[in-house]
Amino acid sequence: MSRGESVQIIEAEGLVKRYELGGEVLLALDGVSLTVAEGEMLSITGPSGSGKSTLMHILGCLDRPDAGRYLLAGEDVSRMSRDRLAEVRNRRIGFVFQTFNLLPRLSSIENVELPLMYAGRSGTREIARAALERVGLGDRLRHEPSQLSGGQRQRVAVARALVTNPALLLADEPTGNLDSRTGQEILSLFKALNREGHTIVIVTHDPTIAAFCDRQVRLSDGRVSEDITPTPRSATAPPAGAGAAAPPPEA
Image 1: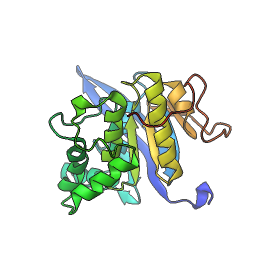
Image 2: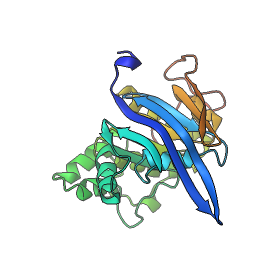
Image 3: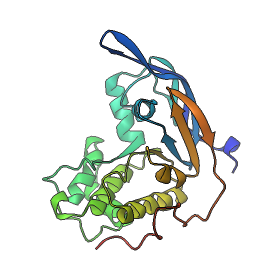
Image 4: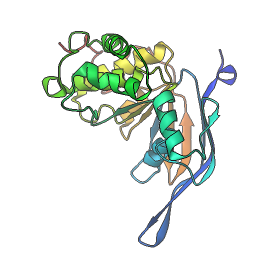
């Protein structure tokens, strides 16, 4: 299926976001337009102050634009109340953060269950178990975050993001707290999930991570400065400087 025929998961048009700082108005986003088709894997990059964090917050329904229109999986979320945005986040978006954001006193399976419980779903334990098995952690169900390596904690976070079968997987610097070898494992996991059909957007300052994606959107001064699709490469080949192909998940 061509991109033109694909279902659009993200349709953003003319997004504007302003902040007041010390009596001055900062224009964080200045008319950003972006479409992301179902099944794409892309990166959003840019220097500090470029607007990528602000754009991530809007795409993730953590904030609303001051102007412009944003459709997520066909649903206009631009002017929704904060309560409605929270419902959309739980139903349509899976988040993976640099700092994992796991609750320290809960086991892996309990952390993964949380979004299902918030959504009022039944059979949460088995769904969470399947999600952990999917990311290679079927033998770590009862382990708390302190008993896991960094890579394993991020895999728990990925399982938690996937457990509601979201339309969009949004990752913010997902390898930022990992060594290069473990970071490569997590990127390879994202690539495998993308091959299964998941739509993935990775927000990063790291050009090596950006190069792992099939499309790169770069921001500068609150605007899209580049939107490029690199020359295709092997689906399993790591980007230059990222190390060897990923080994099996950590024991």
